[in-house]
Length: 247
Image (tube, rainbow, N blue to C red; front, side):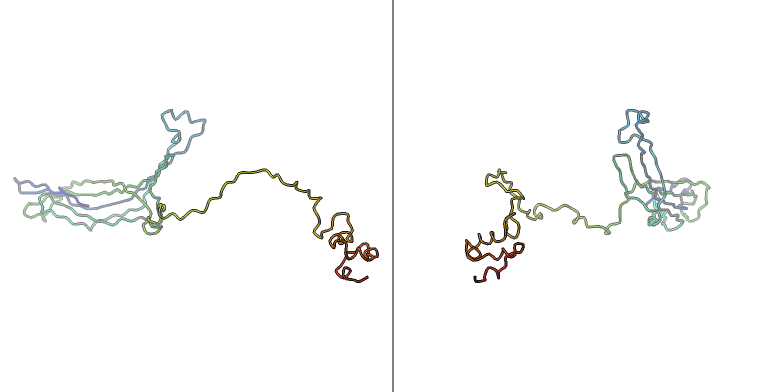
């Protein structure tokens, strides 16, 4: 930061009036604005000129998230025609402040930051040939300046910007094959049997004896050409040994 025009010379009296910087104070203010929406009962009292999304009571809160006061650290030069003061100071935010990044929403919610710099300068009187022999005049001024700042998150802690951008057309991989949509056709074959008409897992029809089912599988040979052994065991199943026995 640089201040010019701090020296005013009088050629008739060979004197000069200069302003000396005494103190610098800076602070970073955060302004939060929010609108509480009105209920339908009190909506008409706000008037017809207010947007529907911003009808309500506005709330504003200003807090300081960083400040510092300096009394030294700048360079003054009163030998130039207009004089100058060069000032440089670091600015930081308190970790306990929990600052919020700048944002602005359509419903009226807004967060902004402004840097306020206050300088106290005192007037001095000195001869032109001897500017170091100053005499305070007792006059002082307070210079206040405002600088709008945009507060964001610290760079380097998130994903790189080139990785956040959407992929380009040449970077999109091949899509999976699409499923062909066929034409629905009605089934015109043999009627589908009911569940009661299906054969059980052992191959015997419901209500049929094991001997009759085995005889049909062997085409009339075996148990049909010899006395059936199932007469002595009506409630038992035919085994492989019964089929291989000789009469």
